[in-house]
Length: 278
Image 1: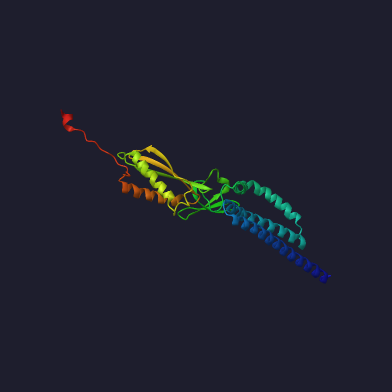
Image 2: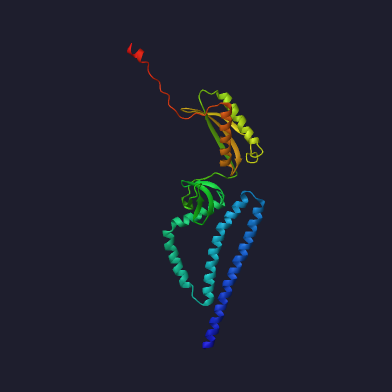
């Protein structure tokens, strides 16, 4: 009887090991197939590659959790551990946790729709929930951002009401430059437009600027400056680099042309004391 008991338990242990190995191999197979699909999409380039990569980073976690749960329950059945009480307790705990984890469920559902609707993906620069930065990861519950200072922000997906994607498909650089009131506006606009067009035609920058610059004209009459505005349409990730170079070139060109870029100041007028006394 003892031998039969040992043999029976030995067979169950071997079967459990075989099941665990089988589940693991199936997971590896699915992961390899999915990875191959992502690699083929990535070879095409564009937003579809980044979207596929982001989707896989989330689905991989879901698949891992699913396979672990299936593997544990299957091994328990093979070994002879009754799982009915576990399922009953799990259902009760699930109901209790469900009432207390509504925010968690909301975060997960929101994360799924973020990916399904392609609102943003890994590598995009976005502004959400009062913070902005590059998307480093999109997890089941949170979106991970790193800002320009290097700080990492973890934003729960369920708290994202409005998303501003700064690098989706293309960007537009708005160039605002103030000139002094004494400067002839038409002459300044001509120089402003000429410099932006030269910049767009520069071979080192022409691949970043996708369309002819737009010179919108006078945008505002400020307290101490007349504000000129132009717009450059650029690649999705070139917004900040192009803007810095454009401002540098305009400053140098205005200096060369003698066009004054003013600073805020106050003009004081002194009353004529002689006329006041007379």
